[in-house]
Length: 117
Image 1 (tube, rainbow, N blue to C red):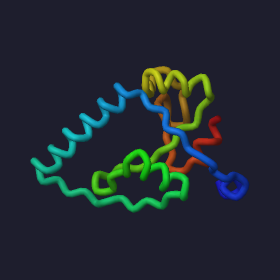
Image 2: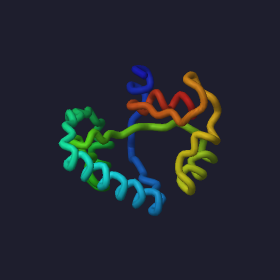
Image 3: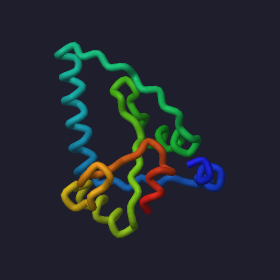
């Protein structure tokens, strides 16, 4: 990742959103937050280092909730697959088997996900 970080500069980040899937996520997150309160679950907040472009992105589109352990994760794929994901969400059943078997893989660093594009 080091060589990629030194050779790439982020100019912009675009948000591609399926409103129905986003609404479903937000509703589910609210239910989980209620359960956390109702059951007295204690979560350790995450402390994330974000590049400037992601920090700016999160302020435009809503901050991630560190107390809820949200974070940015990256998924590397080809353009054709991006369109399918945007329309229907992630479906591990359609993925190719990876190192740990069939599933949908995410990384905390974009440079790792970039290796799969």
